[in-house]
Image (tube, rainbow, N blue to C red):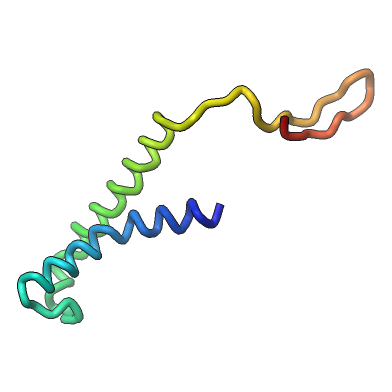
Length: 85
């Protein structure tokens, strides 16, 4: 679970990293607040787009199995606990 969260954080930060690389390439300071201020909205929207696109692609192309979690149920008046197959 932690890996998935860290993966999404990395994907969200890709536009920010690309913009910092562009600033370095353009010989501007990536630490200058004036360079970042007009771009914050675009960078956040681009990061959200990348995260949402990755989640949609994972949902569309993810491996589907019939196995998985079986929820708890009653059989003959007894509670059978949930389990993984």
